[in-house]
Amino acid sequence: MPVKYLGWLVEIIYQDQSGKITKRRIQVKNIRSGLIKADDLLSGQPRTFRETGLLACHPIKESA
Image (cartoon, rainbow, N blue to C red; front, side, top):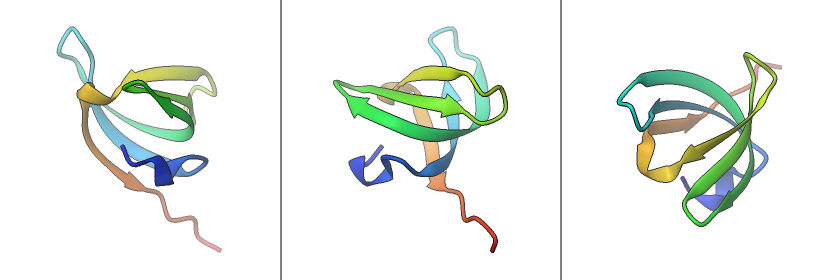
């Protein structure tokens, strides 16, 4: 994930280490050493994702 997404709302498709694939909306807080720290917008909980598990990502456009 590009560092330019720091602070952005992003939709991702992610595969965890067990192979489960999920679609999530997150707000990116930090990207370092292959880890993405973010707030999950659905649960409101902080989450950590491995960049290697990221299958797709795109910024969420907010409507005015």
